[in-house]
Picture 1 (cartoon, one colour):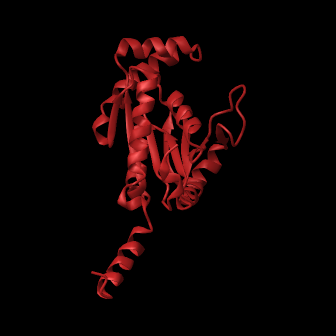
Picture 2: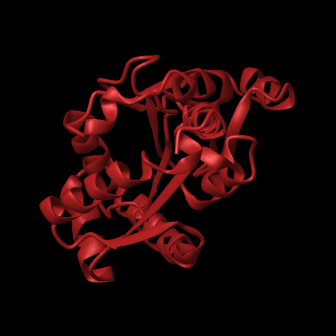
Picture 3: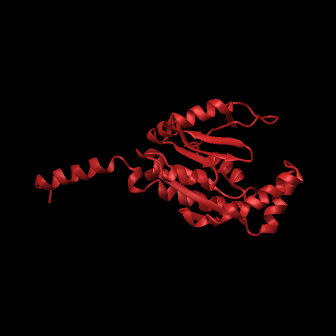
Amino acid sequence: MSDTRSMARRGLLIILSSPSGAGKSTLAGRLRDWDSDIRFSVSATTRSAREGEADGREYHFVEEAAFKTMVRDGEMLEHAFVFGNFYGSPHRPVQDAIEAGADVLFDIDWQGAQQIANSPLAPHVLSIFLLPPSIHELRRRLESRGQDSAEVIAKRMTRSWDEISHWDSYDYVLVNDDLDTTEDRLRTIITAERLRRTQQPGLMAHVRKLQDEFEDGGL
């Protein structure tokens, strides 16, 4: 656990992206286990719940009309149409969390990352892209999960290059060839980014205090 917990700070908006099968969901879970100050952003989606999923836990499951209304009313921080369904991140819960000093973790694609990077919350964004060690290994991981049909896996593999081609728009890029090593690197990045000037709202008051002491003859 980082020492920054005891400091007054703004939360980070942590974007973790990768092609399907590169390990982002596993690493996102590990980061939450590492630090309870990291919350997972619960996205809204128009797809149906899968077996074992609960509304408000994995996703907020909404009708397409309701989703489009949220987008129209500016209630979505980002949204995208992926594999026949809409996905999006409600703005208000994220805003409230980072103002309270909690980090919000996003498992989203490059489209969502770009929308957030262009949002009013951009100063608090930390974006990280995960690359697979090879395309062969990426396919092996997708097949070993046993969650998707061969047709869906083929679509994910086709989409993977589009995802990878946007790697250079992220703050950090890691090759996930070993989960433990990648997790350690993610922890290091987050710990350092929490000390970024924009994340420390008390710095201005402290500098003013130093200035007052200086002007009062505190040399």
